[in-house]
Picture 1: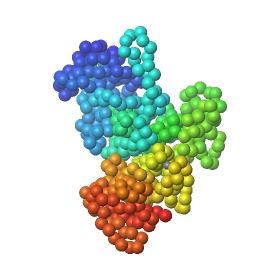
Picture 2: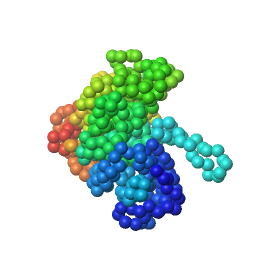
Picture 3: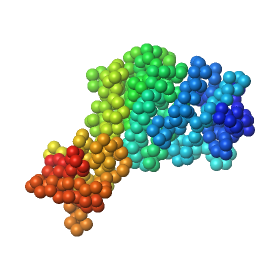
Picture 4: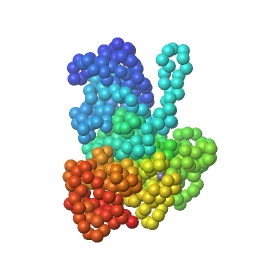
Length: 451
Ligand SMILES: [Zn+2]
């Protein structure tokens, strides 16, 4: 295929021409250029068309995706927008939105840094740290990744090529943009993409299955594992010991004989000190229910595609994980599992001695430290909005050391005290945190302060 030149005009299927401004990057499938079209700037992905198995079918699929539009409101996707015409050599490409400023690539987040081009020619490149503003933001990003794939799967499509190059993330807010959506296809169909080593489901690596929604779920667990633990779920001592060539290596360790590094029934592939220090350090920091979710994903889920956790369940787990971070008044920030237990549900901060009660609502358990928030997904039925604050734990202005939950919604809550007296908690009002207190957020949805 012929590469495009700066200034070259590329005829568009919808009419007009896109003008090539500069090259933005290149990969195995093609080259990405910045172009202007109808007065706006876009990214153009221009394919190495000889590497596409069936260019016509691939192009038809792209066109269908453009016509369907991105799932839900599309805010989470850099979706194909316009097709170019096919040139004489049979080559073509598509236009998409440019990655907005302020977003980092998942790869750079994973590595913890990126190289910034020098401002002046000749100056050395600058190594810039890339990290999330906080643990909360990292978990928000994880939830957003899962929600994007849930939306895609609900639309009856699979992504097929999930890998660390497929996301841009705002490290200050946790907003996620899924890019490289050109391999998205109706579930059950595939236009040639297999996926990236390390992210592909074992049955795809073995050639026993084509990418689909279930293999997406496997890849998603890998992405989440990498985000949380900064390591590869299948790379441990067994893989390090192996000396065969890379391709064969991948087939064995990621296809035929994949072993999770923390498989409770198989310790042949444990992480190695000095090589996998991130995973070793981070694995035990996370609460048991998160370790369990990954263990299921990479043990039963490796063999049995239907045993992989569905997106809805991942979202619940990660909302619970987000709630589980205690920002203690003394400045300590940690998962509740690292706080000292006092009774079955009550905790004490080892640093400052504060008692922290737990609010149980449905399957969620929420530590009630000062400043802790309740979200719509907790106080409303069938809601998965985990960002809108509907309640917050505040200290009584007159009685220091007395805490309450303030109603931040426009509706009243009903609080039932241990003596069975009932009090209405109107908007902006607070109810004291008492052992045995029940709060009805809406009919049929009740939370209780656990003992
Ligand atoms: Zn404390």
